[in-house]
Image 1 (tube, rainbow, N blue to C red):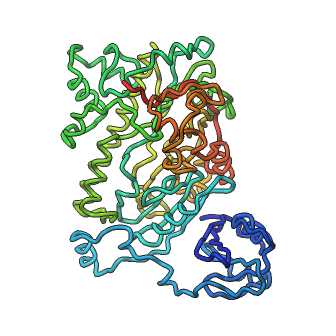
Image 2 (image 1 turned 180 degrees about the vertical axis):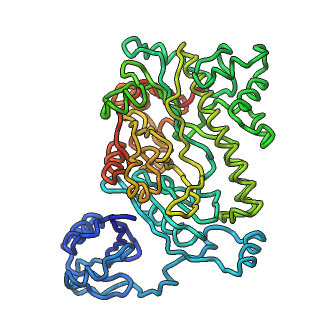
Image 3 (image 1 turned 90 degrees about the vertical axis):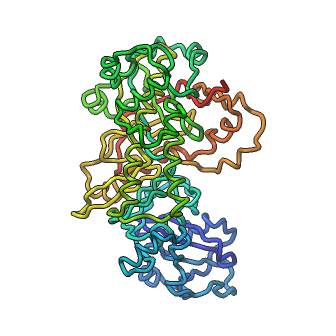
Length: 524
């Protein structure tokens, strides 16, 4: 599926400190030595190259081409007198067992006994869609562990925004046959992006005034008058018989309108979290069109207008989705289920409900945001990037698990950068079936973190520089810890992420959006 290879590399004097390179299949020994020298920060010229699995010295280009394959392990030395420092391992010694990824439970033992199988070590294909974007090698290790250690994994794709997660990486799409793995979706089930075209004219936009007016997105439920603000709400408000509802009654009716099964988890529905953004990298952002790239799609297909403002909302299922994953992990660890088991069916019921809840949440956030600034909106898209869904690929029914990966089979998608950087409205290249298979019908969902939040936990000062960005946009974030953790330098370069997606023919850019106001959180 992939035209590139992942190569593991190490310095012979520090052989346990492996790094990764993503290279073309036609790379030469000289070229890979130059890349390895830079990646490993070697000060001297490389004089020896070893096959890391056999310890054999690679002396000629023919020898290199004979062993060049995906996941090749190369060891380089700048000391001609230093012998190979690694250990020659068998294939079984190189692979961790499935027990590393989750506890065995009565259920999983029963699954194994029913199929007369022990934990399976796979050799699933791993594709990394990164050409020039920054990459943390530990994310590749996490993805490879999934490919080798989870049963029935078929394809693993790392998007340009790939970065390490707690156990499994973020920014990836993983296809499995017959098995569903809740941890591969994560706790924020149904998290995604929604984009709305507003009736606010760019020339009349009053940013300072809007910043003062925007508030109340921390409190669940309705804010403002009970009338239609979004086009997707028209039928809802037209059907209301009682306009003097309590907040709880409004929430129940709103969720019912979006198809949410209220009885699934009454505890979290009673928490009134619906209509709240949440922490982390979630936000609501008022934007303008910076540049139109594909006029046909922009004007004719999407009927967009460059002279009005747009609202992008990034949020998910809040505490509801988290409760679903915690319940699974408390009982089963990181294991998955065969699709026909009752546990798998119950998870998918909760999963689908959380996705509907998340869509209702994004709609209510948009409604409240626009209500604050006396505007209305028309939904352009709403796309989940944390979910699992079935898809037939090459006549085989598979489950695509997306954790921080936008689907390429749902129409146009919007890919945001960090706050204070551009966002991209893109069209998946669905006409290129080969590239869609290679990317597992998925694209990056954002810029992707470059540094852990802990790096910024104790940062002090410079607050003013973080509330007004380099693009002149305003940031509403009255939680100082969150303000520092989510600063632009913590993320990869979104421009490069998009270039990588274009390089692999995953998407084409329709338009570039520029932020005006990014809303994170108010204190009150």
